[in-house]
Image (tube, rainbow, N blue to C red; front, side, top):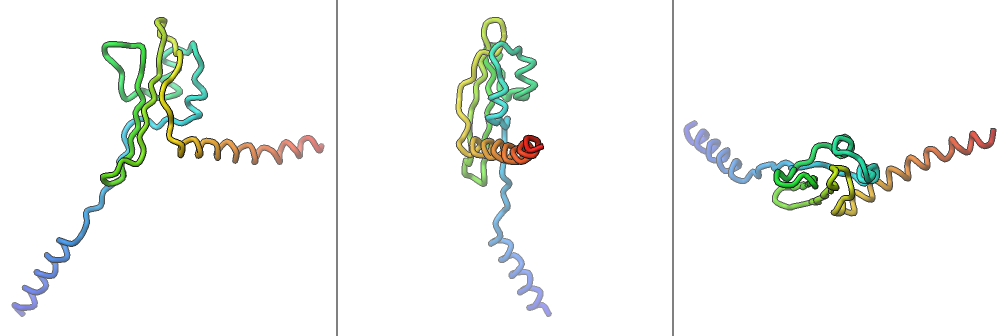
Length: 131
């Protein structure tokens, strides 16, 4: 009986040493899509930009002329996605332009969504024209 308990304990301890710890996918920052960037128009005030884009992760305390939207996704120890969009404002605190690029994967998702919506709308338009 004593040998059985020792053997079971050793096997339990040994199996615990070989298990790997599960690591979550970590997403940090603002998710920015091409659709959001397309909605931005020069002359918008900061409140309108924040409504479209959300509150930025980084606001420069020394300069109020730009906001930084940073996004990073990590899977285990690997950096999977990362981008940085800087929204710039003029002296009147109105939106002027943005700097930075989104990864190609985000562009593909946005274009697929637009294509799907366009394809779904096309048969309905054809039915209306036929009537």
